[in-house]
Amino acid sequence: MTDFTPGPHLLIDHRGDRHLTDADALEAALRGAAEAAGAEVLSASFHAVDGGVSGALILAEGHVAVRTWAKQDYASFDVFIPGEGRGKLAADHLARALLPDWTQIRSVTRNDFTPATA
Image 1: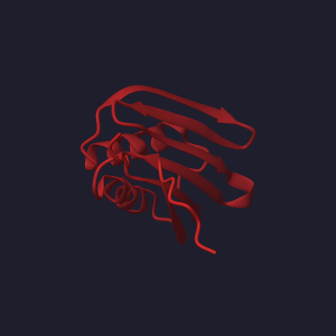
Image 2: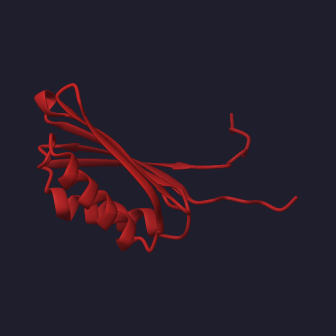
Image 3: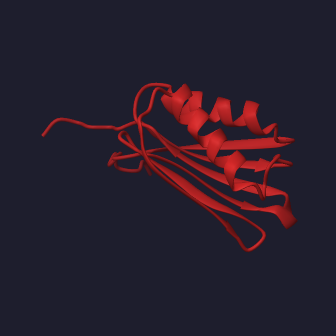
């Protein structure tokens, strides 16, 4: 079996985001992020929920998702677009489109079964 690492899975936190309750604007931002990463959108689902928005794009390559909490001024994004640097292109687009006051990005390597060192 050959090694297969599909690429980083980005977990992105925004504070002070614009459009925390606007499902249409968030869908447009996520579509722009997918386009910036060269990804193909297969389907989309976005809903106003409990003072925020929950939504996702299903991509041929992976997914991009968001959940916002307007009262807490917080948005959580999940970006999984395999390929060198493609997730970062999507994350950069989200930051430019939504203009958060603060961003934190964590990267998780998928399919990494390297034993932990003691």
